[in-house]
Length: 530
Image (cartoon, rainbow, N blue to C red; front, side, top):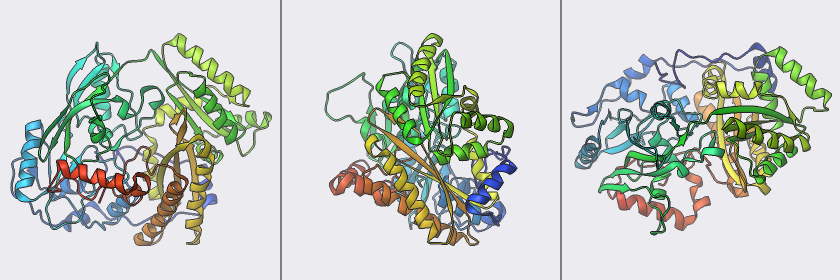
């Protein structure tokens, strides 16, 4: 069963080895186990639904609670403490386009606000109900999950937008294809959610971000249906797909999505290479990209993330042998790990691997085989479960991300990390910060930073500290000219910084677009733009 106040299936735990606990204690201090509220205590205080009856609408308190929050850090504090000031008044599970249209008409008739809901994995507040005098209805798309059409010649597949990552891949693989879109939230997030938030998968270097994969679709809006046909390319004015990509449920509800698919690769390999420092690693990544070598992933960790990864891994004998090997090669505390992924035909993989490793070697890289890459691949969708374990030990964990040109990448990493440290030191506390470049491009890179800190004795104080760090890091990002979000979207948490990126006129244009399709403002209010 899925956890109501954390990540994933409640039958799955992610143990933290004793050596890792000691590592965290040295970095930020000993955590103190928080006092979490029970499910029953939350349900007792759930307000009554304000919705008029409808055959598709469920007002059961547990169902409403399960759709009340996503996976942002404030969401976790709300759910773990019971300090939840808003709930959906009901949840509907449409099974067809007709059901969605019916629910939109129902909302217009009674002045109801609608929140489209995919997998509930948003980390920036996309699905949070904004407290309002109007009733709120969450539209859970999970029962609209079928493969509608597959064109193997054109490499196109059309799905209901509520299909989850595993279900989508299973239906494609039965026909010999893959979408290749694997965000860390893959197990629960949905195709519609990926499109609505401009998601990026971990192997985007080969398959592309969702904007490359999204070919067309069907959007049900408060003023009617918008159909977007798929073309190989078109010069017929602005691309209407761009209106839907990143729209975050403000225009309507995406019910169908046509995506560009790929044959299942013959083979996938993930290798690890260590560099003496971050500078050499960045240069290797840039040269590999410039050489045009076909890879599915390049993921470069800073020295601090490399140290943290090795410390949290356990496997002391294996890690000890690695450390000795790298020490012989002159690597010290500044060493950085690059994960390199290859996907395709076996003969081509060998060629591309040799070319990439040759470049890495010339820049001081030491190839240590596939063990670490295989472990990453095996656990990449289990890593979020560690967040549950760390919370129960008294530690909060959150992430933030941006993207910027190569020339500013090292400075952006330094400024984000410095902002987090400085803001937390004002509370007399330490924060453990580590970063990796998760998605790389010929012209720049995304930057993904994780920060871990002790929970305060009071949840309100924990939120004060989190907001100080989030604000400081966000200001550092915008000051240097990075995007406020490379892959998580805007939601609530990034909304205050959107104007810095888009400008006054740009935000006004987005707001006007929302009004065009939703003149009465019923669609997911308070997200993306105010």
